[in-house]
Length: 189
Image (cartoon, rainbow, N blue to C red):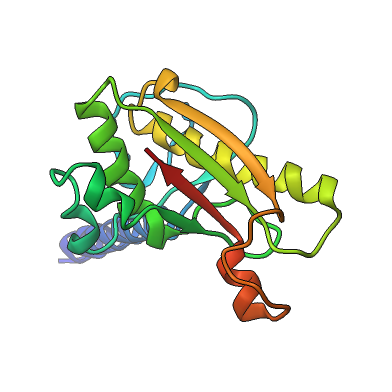
C-alpha cells in the first residue's frame, strides 16, 4: 500500500513538473522572447521547418501570430498588404511587438510566393533625440523588420532598407500621441 501511494505521489509530482515546464515555455514564446540570432530556440510560432537566413547584427522580437484578419491578407496581393504595412515601435526601441507578427507574416508569405517582388522598409522615429541618433534608430528599426522577414524565409535580395529618422513624420505634433505614430517602420512595394 505504501509503495503504490509513493508511486502515485511520485507520478503526480512528475506530471506537475512537466506541466509547469510546458506552460512556462509556452508563455515565454507567447510573450515575444528576445532572440539574438536564428540559431537560438524560442522562435515563437515560426516552427522548426521555417527557412532561416541570418542578417547582420542585432536582435528581434518574435511572438504568436495575431488575429485572423491580419492573416487574411496572405492571398490578397500587394494592394491589401499596402493597407496594413506599418509596424509601430515603443520609445527608443527596435523590438517588434507581438501585435505586428501577423502583419509581417502576411508580407513574408507574399514575398515568398512572389520571388520577383521587392520591398523597401523605411525606418522612422519621433522628433526627440539628435538627428544622428534618430537616423541610426530608424535604421535599426528597418533592419529589425528585415531580419524578421528573413527569418520567415524571405530572400535577402527582396529587401532594402532606408532610414529617414525624424525627417518624415506621419503626424505633426509635440505630444506622445503624435510621437507614437511617428515611431514606425513602413513596408513599401
